[in-house]
Amino acid sequence: MRYAHGGGFTAAQRHQRELVRLKAADLFARQIPPTVVAHRLRVSRMVCPAFFGVGFLDPGAT
Image (cartoon, rainbow, N blue to C red; front, side, top):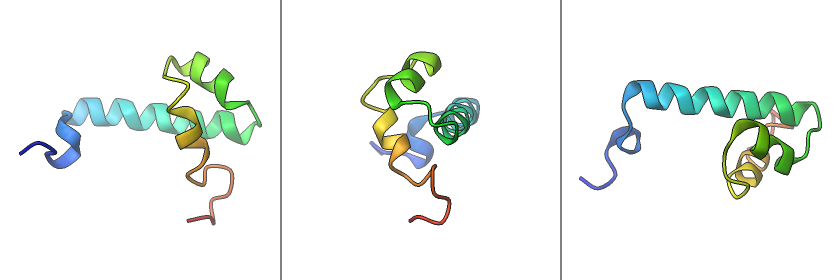
């Protein structure tokens, strides 16, 4: 199957990705700009706006 459960990642890889997401949430809560977050977490600048837009700043948002 092309898109296996978990996107084809191992449990350890999924855990590592979740840690990055949580770090991004913390940085966004501190009002750090997405480009700086991308640099600090060593991820693509294209990924950070996606993190930024999924309700990290407003936990009640859907």
